[in-house]
Every structure is written in C-alpha cells, then in structure tokens.
Image (tube, rainbow, N blue to C red; front, top):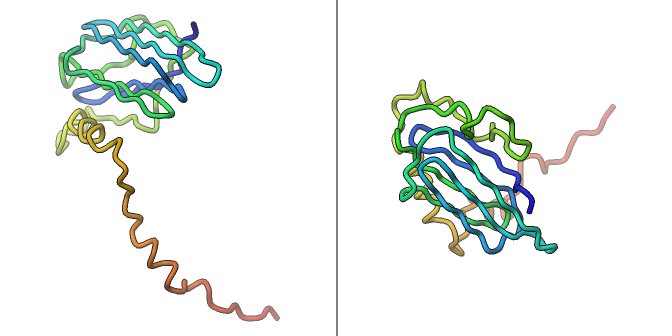
Amino acid sequence: MHPATAKWYDRRDSVFVEFCVEDSNDVKVNFDKLKMEFNCVSGTDNIKHHNTVDLFGEIDPKSSKHRRTDRSVLCCLRKAEAGKSWPRLTKDKAKCNWLSVDFNNWKDWEDDSDEDLSSFDKFSEMMNSMGGDDLPDLDGADEERDSADSDDEKMPDLE
C-alpha cells in the first residue's frame, strides 16, 4: 500500500485535509479524537492507498466529515477546541513526504475577528450543494454570443 498525496489547511473551527486520489473507490475514513485513518483504491491500476495521521490536536470525530469527488477526497476535521491554531497537521514534527500545506486555501484567520459564517458551516453548505446536476449561471454567457464585442471592430491600417 502507498500513502496518498495530501494537502491540508487550518481554519478557526476546523482543519481540512484533501487526499489527491483520482477515481477513488472503497473510500474509508475513520476519525478518532487524536487520529485519522484514510483508505481507498484509486485509478485504473487499482492502487491501494493507506494513510494514518496522528493529529496535532484533538478533533470531534462525530462532527468531522469527508466528501469524495472524482479527483480527491476532502476531509473536514472539526477541532475539539475552536480558535486554537494548528502549526502543523501531525503530532510529530517530522516531515511526511506525502503531506504538504495547501497555500491556495491557507488563511491567517487569527487576525480575523468578523467571520460571517464559520468555515465548517461553509463546508457544510458546499457539501450539500455538491452532487447536483445544476450548472452554475455563467453570468450571461449566452448574451455574449448574440452581441458584438468592442474588440471586434475593424483595426486601422498601420502606416
């Protein structure tokens, strides 16, 4: 078994871990207060992945969730003690070669005091909205085809 590549980021109430496995099957995620286990089979070669993470801090296993997509498995670990920053995901300071920080989603939330929704609520809303056949409104994409763009005008000749 191989460990799955993963990215993580910290929020006020939760820690998010995204396992980057395409076409995953038999996904099993077990949450414990101080540990998380991830198992799946991925790809056309049916590669088995297994990750065990001894967590930096405690989580609430009952409130923690995961969501599978075609490209990854996103886990939301609900912190037992909200508002406490996690400097790393793992209990040990040793670097895991399969784990990296997701800087695209990282936010310095310690200076933010006026979040309208907690990240867990936003994650829950995202989870509930996923999986439907509804396509997002493309902000008038049909209108663009019907009207001429300003850059479609004839360019003056060069001298």
